[in-house]
Every structure is written in structure tokens, then in C-alpha cells.
Image 1 (cartoon, rainbow, N blue to C red):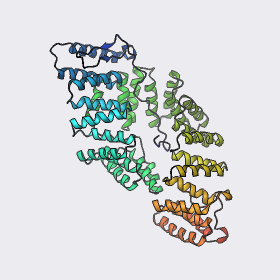
Image 2: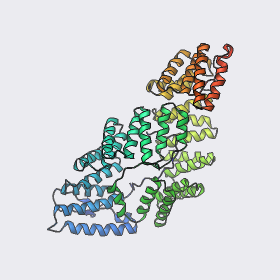
Image 3: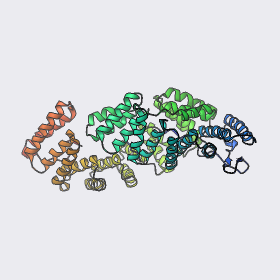
Image 4: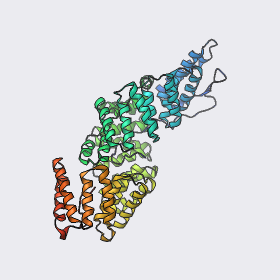
Length: 534
């Protein structure tokens, strides 16, 4: 699961319309040749009036064209290709796939149908099929920049980091300023803990696409990996929802083919992703006007309104969606976010619990529920939620560290230590987990849980890896727990000098306070809660 727990972005309802299209035996477009597939046409009763009119007219035209005796393979391919693109634009996936496959068989060297089929599979999260199609497309037209970028993103999603890196480098060979390729290489480097390299690529992406403020979050994660917490925080404060995309004329042209509610939904989503929230609101309002019973329209309008700070209007849209579908998890989650932001914790908790009832596997909603319960001072309930998250997603480090902190607040120090030990053994390369464990071993309020020697070993390994001042302070803390007060004080003075020179004011003040304890043998040993938290 991606690490999204430090951000609470409202969920836009995906435009995949999976509920859509009933098929029946009498709605089949027969194949004019033996090696082609019949096309299962969408049920027009499930479509808006404008869309229905367009599709019926187009399908009739294509059906007549397919039956013309003198039609060439290229002409048939164009007919199937046109129908496929319209279906894809309306997210009618099954007939779109059948049409693209026919178009490919009729014109196997036509790059468009192979590439767009790959994009269709990518939208449907069919990663192996998408990758195979993009690889074929790349052989047909090696200069189309979006192909290696999409391949890289697919490999990255599957954690095939070497393949992803190779694909993004192929994109840079076509365009050295490609922001999407630099961003992808940055994500690869971040996954491999090559933080400095990741920062270089993210900065290059941001220089080319300065409006893509989502990159700031990735920069924050890279700086956090280096232990530069103040820089990480500064980038976190600048993060936004605008991502970076590669120019893709073939996909972009699909939007010119659509009309009706879906047209406004797709246009609104594009405006939302570009950070043009006022435009997104206008499009989603038109989608609601076209179909007041559209759950995606209400949810997406609410999400766009919230980005403009129109919280009450956004709440009204999510509540409208719930009147249409009381179990809709996206509307429930979004209401949980908004009520939590208003510090109305009880309704926030109610909606988040309802979201989890609809989708118990939604770990992000469960973590948000746990955090909201903490803010509402319902700590035992929060601990129960964290227990479920960590059991289901042991790789989710943020949730684990928050849970350990909560257990310490509940004075369940043994349990906190046990969870950190378990995670450290399972993920021995995790620096933040090791730092939290070192801190607890050196300064646990429950003295019999301390182990200064192990704390020192962990702290030294983390400090050697990052060189961060706060991690150096952990080493001094462990030395103090071992009674090596002069060494702890000497190290703390060096760290204090570094913190002051780097203008880390808050950290320097904490280091100075701890140094006073290390200089006094009577108060050298941590008292539980002493030292600098990692």
C-alpha cells in the first residue's frame, strides 16, 4: 500500500463506471471476417440521453461500414478504432477492448491501436497486459515519449525498480527535460534509499513543471530520509495536489469525442488534477445538472469545493451523495476528513466508522480514524484501530510509529517496545523504526526496559547512515544511559555547535537543555522522556 497516511486528500470517485454496461445476446456487432471478434455493445438504457444518441448513431454508421463489400482492412481498422476511442472516452471498457483488438488485427503496424489498448489496460489496473502492449507500441514507434514514461510508471507500481529506471532513462533519451521521467527516476531512487539522487531528479522535475506541487511531498520524503527534518517540513508545507504528467496527444484527443455527464466529469477531473479547482467546480456542477442522481458528480463536486475552502458546500455535496447511496465509502471518508478538520470529532468518527463498515480493508480510513480518536482523547479505541492497521499492513511504518507513541502515552511501555522490536527485526534497514527503538531503549520511563548497549548500537548505525543532528543526539542519549557522561557531553557539544550553525533553533535549545544534564553526573542518566526524540 502506498504511504499516504501523512496526507488526507479527499477521494475523487474514480471515473471507471464499473457498474455500467449490461450485455445481451441481441446487442452484438457481428464480425465481418472470421478472425475478428464480435463486439458486445453497451446497453443504451444505462446511458444518459446525449451519450445514448451519440453512441447509437456511431454504432449504426460503423455497422453499415463493416458490411460494405469493398471495405479494405485499413478502412475497417479505422472504423473499429473510432468506435474503440469513443468507448474508451466514456470508460466503456469491454467493447473498447474488443474494438481495439479488431483494429490491431486489421492493421498490425498501426501504432495508435496498440498504444491506446495499453492505455486502456493501464486504466483498468491490468499491469502485465498494459506493459506488453506498451512494449509492442514502442517497437512500432520508438519516438512517442509517453510510451516509456507509462512503462516506467507500470514497472514502478509493481516494484520492478530496475525495469522502471531503464524505461524512464529511455524517456530522457527522447527528451532530457521530461519532468515525468525525472519524477519517475526520483521515485525509483527514493525506493532504493538513494535520497540525494532522488532530490536531484525531483528538483529537475520541479524546475521543468513548477506548478506540479505534489513533487514537494516526494522532496520532503527524500529529505526526511537524509535526516534533514527541517527541510522536510518546509517541503511538506508546500505540497499540493498538482501532479506531473507526460504529454500524451493520443489520450488527450479522446476527450474531444465525448459529451454528456461523463464529458463534464472527465473535464472536471482533468481540471482538478491540474489544480484548477474553480474550473473543476464549474464542470462538476454541469455534471450534476446533467444528472442529479450521479454519485460521482456529487462526490467530485464536493472534493473540488473543499479545495476552494468551501467546506460547508462540500459537506452538502457529500451528504447528497449519501442520500443516493448511504453506504458510499468515498463520501463517508471525505466527510470524516472535513468534520475532523472542523474539530467536530464525533461526526468525523461516525463517518469514518461507516466508511470502514463498507470497506473494512481501507487502511487509510482506519489510520485516519485512529488519529481522529486520538484527537478526541479516545486513546484505547485509537490503539485498537492501530492494532488492526499494523496487523494488516506491517510495512506501513508511519502507522506503527504512531501506535508505539500512543502505547507510550497509555503507559504501555512494554507493548510499545515489543512492537518496535518486532518491526525492527522484520525490517532491519528502516532508520526511523531503529531510531524510535533506540530512543525507547535509552530513555523508557519504565527503567527495567532500558538497554543502553543495544540503544547505543542502534543509534550509532542510524547516525552513521544519516549524519543528522537529531540522530547524533540519540547516540549521546544512549551514552548517558550507559553512564558514559563525559562522552555524551562532548558529543552533545559538537551536535549543539552544528545545530546552531545550521540555525536549527528548536533542536539547539533541546540539545542545550540535555547537555546540562550530561554535564552533571547526578542527573546524567535519562529520566524518561529526556533526550531528543528521533
